[in-house]
Image 1 (cartoon, helix red, strand yellow):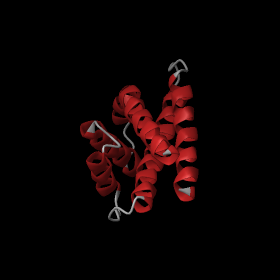
Image 2 (cartoon, helix red, strand yellow):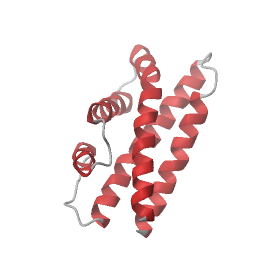
Image 3 (cartoon, one colour):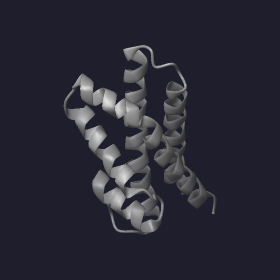
Image 4 (cartoon, one colour):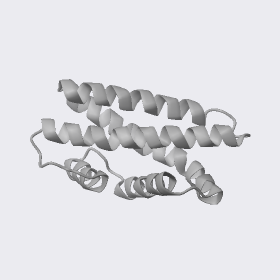
Length: 130
């Protein structure tokens, strides 16, 4: 589980940064933009951690974020598939285009996304420890 450990640790660090950013008063666009960037890091590390964990568990390869999320849902590592698909959509929107209105909508969803990310992190950490 050595490969899984390092990516889960990185995922935990990114998520801690996201939580810290969300605790800041959102009175400046810079705080909101930073929070969205931390979300993007956390999401990327989350699905990639699922990919690594899947490989280490001997599960079929999942080559895309959507495939990894489906596998994580099947394995019970995530329990809110709708939230994860919304996160994937949000990440895709921010990665390929910038629209201030969409960014604000994503910022408003970050607390819900943070909860889902935290549940995945806890589940992956539990797998590593067992």
